[in-house]
Image 1 (tube, rainbow, N blue to C red):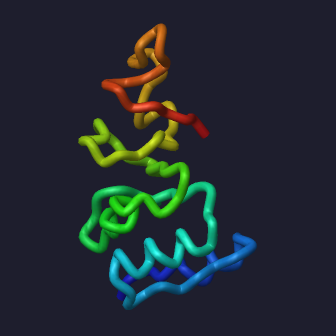
Image 2: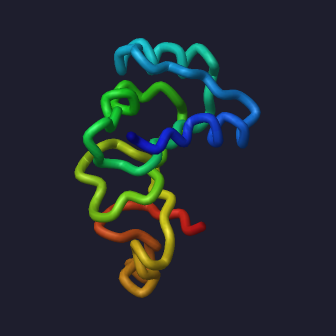
Amino acid sequence: GKDDSRPWIASQVEHYHDMKGLSDLEIAIRINALLADVAVEIVGWYPEQRSGIVAHRPSRVQALYRFIGPGGGRGDDFFVTDSISFPPETLHATTGERRGDRLVYL
């Protein structure tokens, strides 16, 4: 079966909200109601992805964690990554960006 890491994630955060079964719009509305400052989509493109949630801009700042490749116009404010996925030497010397994507390194 699939590895379900949700219990571990829930144990590592102050607040965990199980929104399984809700539509992207329903989740975006709940995130907005929580007055979340930052929404981080973990992993990026995968079969069960929920990019539709961040498409509704439910928080003031949105980020994508560990996305490899350009943002593709998703509207994320920045990407959280590492030096393997995005080597610092590939960044633009002046802007600190890669192909217009703002990166934050772990």
